[in-house]
Length: 217
Ligand SMILES: NC(=O)C1=CN([C@@H]2O[C@H](COP(=O)(O)OP(=O)(O)OC[C@H]3O[C@@H](n4cnc5c(N)ncnc54)[C@H](OP(=O)(O)O)[C@@H]3O)[C@@H](O)[C@H]2O)C=CC1
Ligand SMILES: O=C(O)C1=N[C@H](C(=O)O)C[C@H](O)C1
View 1 (tube, rainbow, N blue to C red):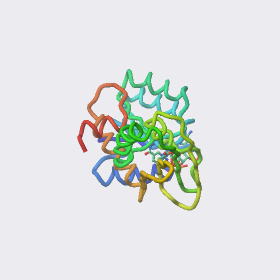
View 2: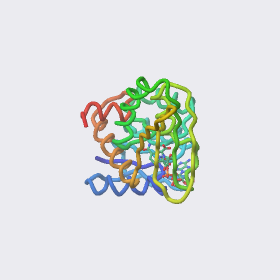
View 3: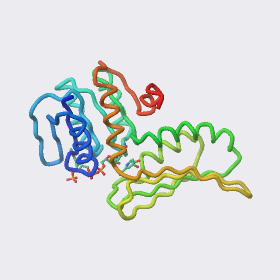
View 4: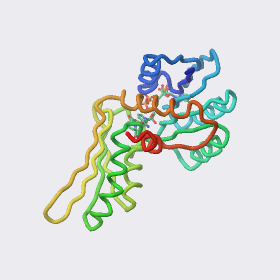
């Protein structure tokens, strides 16, 4: 496929370029804060950058009728509205976490929270010191899956790609459900799976969880 990357100079952008190119796909549109390289029209644009880029990304999707895979976190209602409107014209996959593991964990949590509703519950998330947003998008996804008020504790240190733990405790026991991304490549591989999923779709809004369910991974 011909693909575009928004945030191509960033940590994720570089890995996405690598993973997609190694799978035989061709980068034709590269966008970052200070540079745009436009060679051809992309079938899919992949945006892992910053919420401020979204209007530009959306206008490129409209210009080229490109489908969108978006992993950027810290989106507000305004950004979600832009994505909802865009998804009436092209296909959009949005997720705060493109790893298989977290998306399986989301399912497990929906079940666990019903069985453990009398237990205390809190979330911890640990990321590299360069991460700009707090709490992580994934922690928000986990909190939503728990469907109850829980505290999120955020730590920023070193080069950690992304650790998330949900802790349940009663008077005498502790259950920890933990996910660790060992490398950023897992997110790029998930984005590639999502790009292939929407390649021939006309329009619609999807999450990565929808894609995993459909592929029954
Ligand atoms: N959903 C998922 O699975 C995952 C999501 N993420 C999310 O992806 C995003 C990027 O993460 P990461 O790569 O670590 O961050 P980086 O800061 O390393 O990369 C972001 C890139 O986007 C650039 N940028 C900033 N503003 C704009 C703009 N207006 N238009 C185009 N490009 C812009 C930055 O430039 P500059 O540095 O000059 O500001 C930088 O090169 C974050 O929101 C992160 O939370 C990350 C991993 C997995
Ligand atoms: O910024 C990151 O690095 C990550 N961001 C996502 C998030 O905010 O949840 C996903 C992953 O944890 C890495």
